[in-house]
Amino acid sequence: MMIKRPFSTHIPFFFAIFLVACYSSTSNYRFDYSYIYDADQKLIKPNFKVYHHHQDSSTVYFQLLTNNLLYGRETGDSLLSARILVKYRLYADFSKKEILDSATYPIYTKGINSSNQLIQGKLKIKSKTGKVYPLEIRFRDQNKNLNVVNDIVLDKRMNGNHQYFLLKSADRVVVDQVIGQKGAVSLNKSPLLASSTFLWERTNLKFSMTPPPFTAENNQLPEIPIDFTDTLSFENNLISLKNYYQINRLTSNDEQDYPFYFYYFYDGYPQLTKHENMIDPIRYISTNSEYKNVKNSINPKQAIDDFWLNLIKDEDKAKKALKIYYNRVEEANQYFTDYREGWKSDRGIIYIVFGQPSTIYKNTESETWIYGDEGNILSLSFKFIKNNHPISVNNYNLIRNSDYKSSWYRAVDLWRQGKIQ
Image 1 (tube, helix red, strand yellow):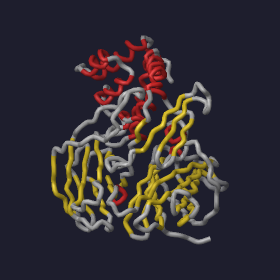
Image 2 (cartoon, helix red, strand yellow):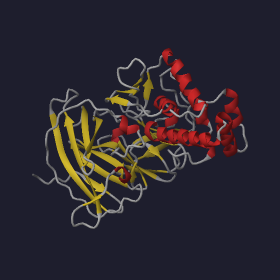
Image 3 (cartoon, one colour):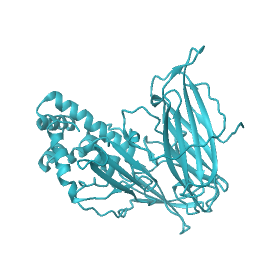
Image 4 (cartoon, one colour):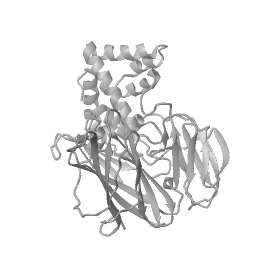
């Protein structure tokens, strides 16, 4: 057994972390990933950010919430503790036959799990420039005896993609390129990129929501009109940014480099912090006239309450439906945000209207959601294909089909009756 040092964590309100490295082999399985979008399942659900800062290695940052861990008291110890086992494997290619780097790290945290504290950590992965690597990271909650698997793609081609930039807000790594609170942010540029001067373009353009799944949609990502342009110069590969907008794009003078995008929607995002934020999402289940009445109201809170009560008639059922609906909107924002809010995306609309899938199969290029028993003729299936474009690291397009029409209207009608999916 050997002690390694590439892994580090920052865990507020805890005071004991011990790291040991070892390795053991495991078999590959076909995993059901439905837990990752299930807010009720208290399983480890990490978010990741890859940063290529060295020719022979990369850093993978991760974040997870303490309330998804099980804390217990060990014999003779007065404090509660959680035990996490982090194991990664970096493969030479997508056949996953050759392992280039691997390690296992136990993390022990002690304290009181009384609120949603954020655990932040990082893994140093051995990887050379010029290739794309599949990376598998497993987190095991040893107190629960449960294992979750995460597949990540390390794109270390010298193309200036988003993995060559590291954005921080209040000393916290922004793992999804979305800033949740207005204020100065710092942006690190990888020393592997030669350019130090970038064009900073930004706009407050708000994109429309996606249409229902049975309608055709142009999956070409839109052209972005630019409202403001500045020239930025990095010093020691670092710069501080303040005047950012909803969509921000940094472009180097090297034509082979991708632009880097980051986003800001409003303070408190992905939560619905104002009643005004709650109006547009009802469009998925409202008529044109209902939506316009709420949209044009001078009292958004009253208009939203009236919409749900007039829709369902029963006050208790209306309150329940309202709560579940907007919880799903916030969860869609958390899970599916890209260049537009998560609730506006293809996965967002399906998640909000149909709810949590029974089964999810996913890989680095697609996700398949199944509602009902797999293989049952009455089950419903949606497939989303990842759109590999620098504007977003989280954009998936639904394979649309006119056959979804009856299922869609049936689901909408159940919402309008207060019969929650």
